[in-house]
Image 1: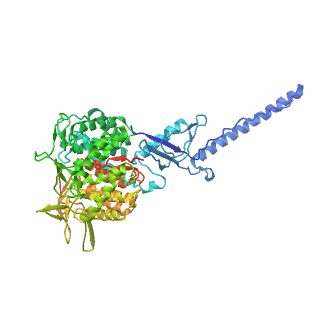
Image 2 (image 1 turned 60 degrees about the vertical axis):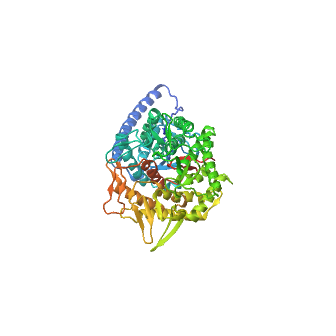
Image 3 (image 1 turned 30 degrees about the vertical axis):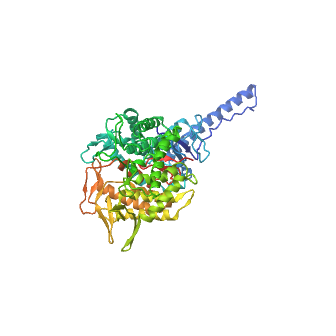
Length: 619
């Protein structure tokens, strides 16, 4: 459940003191005629007093009526002091302050009661107690929710940091998410994705991936109603027995990653852990069937246990990315279950790959396909066939607490040395300078570097900046390359007629040539912009991200969702009937986080898997 704990700071509580009647017990005693005269005299005095009191009461009533019409300046109430509401989500470790001004209410002295709202194990920034009547508490809580309903929730911040969250932009991004989500719920609920023009549902994993992928997104964006609906679907409808061949690596990145992230962010909802274990047990028993290498089969039918390698029936081969997609998720699962078998299975894959590389002279850079005999083929790049392998070499080390003298961190650094030496290209034309990651290919035993770069490779900016900011020391080279690659990826957007990049570009001596002019709303460029913003606090990165978001909204938003675009460098680009699952769970998530307060899902506390699911770093 998504819940909130409130501390109410209520200043200037004016409780009036009621006047007590004054009694006089020292009256003299009198007798006889004197008493009679005295009584008569007293009666006259009493009548006179009563007449005077009646006159005074009439004058007071007239004055009160006049005061109601036009209060005297000296009798106006002082300007009311605001009270502060500090609210916190159950999945957070810090407190956020937000100021709201409400009119002060009368406090009923007789019903006044102390309310001490306990945040339990959560961190308290101040010792605070508030004295309110029950009615006032109810009133203020309702007002607080009314105000909070117009703001993104789930935010962590302090009084100082909250100023670097752009709530207006966050809300606009949140509304675009809802535009897609509401149409998905209406036309394709339970499917993996849908077509935004024809509203046709689509299966890819047969696991409701758009729902599972966005459990954490819904929590992050504070969408309680939508989150509870998604949770109900997971509880009642998510089954791992569909008779369909699916990608085992994508099931891990999207489904297992989504369940594990939701488990942590929901304050450890056992539903997600149980589902994660169920899926992992099936994968371990079926796809990890090669005892020699430990390599998992790329495709699996969770219903009957059948496995496949290349879907076209060709020679058995593995993609490098498929082998590098298990390490984060299985490591975290082992940590929270105490069962090391998951991590062991994932680490064995890396050990085998390292042994195969050592056997050919430790080249570190691996080609993107491997057959069952351990022979590498294909080419070397950072696109969809290999990206996750290189990314997870670093992120596994970060997730597990950045251990000193870690073999995996050392292996990552040596791999990056080779990559920088052989694949990072710096080119200049006109007044611009571009840094990009080329592709190493081989033809007739001649290895050459292309000037091509895929949109997916733009994740490298995030990878290098993350590698530069670690406890074992600063890496100036990584830091500089991260900035240069991210700026180049931004220019891939900025220099087109639409302000959107194509899928693949070529860097010539005079221009960026978008020879694949399709824009499919990928997250990698905004991911790197987000990382650079978080580590540098340079406002330019937010400006880059907002420019891209506005162009995406302008050109890709359609009646029933968001559409991919064809012709990014043409005067009349065309919307396509295509929207991949990652637009919501990755692209919009990174847009949202770019404008959130810096302490929210801090990169010092979380590492994002390749499908943008945040997992807590071991400390």
